[in-house]
Length: 76
Image 1: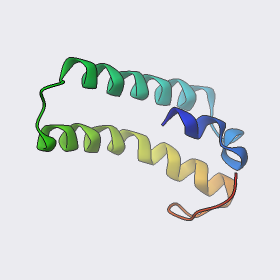
Image 2: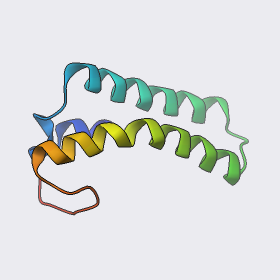
Image 3: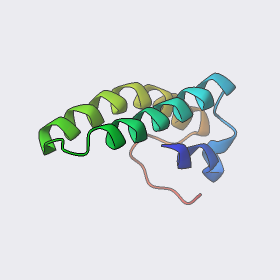
Image 4: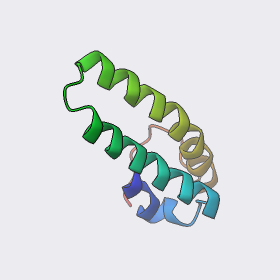
């Protein structure tokens, strides 16, 4: 997630609150993994989906602003 903040075409499209939110989501994810080392694949997937649900709306807006459709590969 954090790497998306510096991707060429996308980097300038993030607002400061979005940057802070992505950094917080990444930290939350890392902390969860650290605290839940014995998790099942299903628990990990459920947590991943929770984070993705909060991350994707930001990325959809950023991709639209950059003129790229979500899911489209492009060179950064």
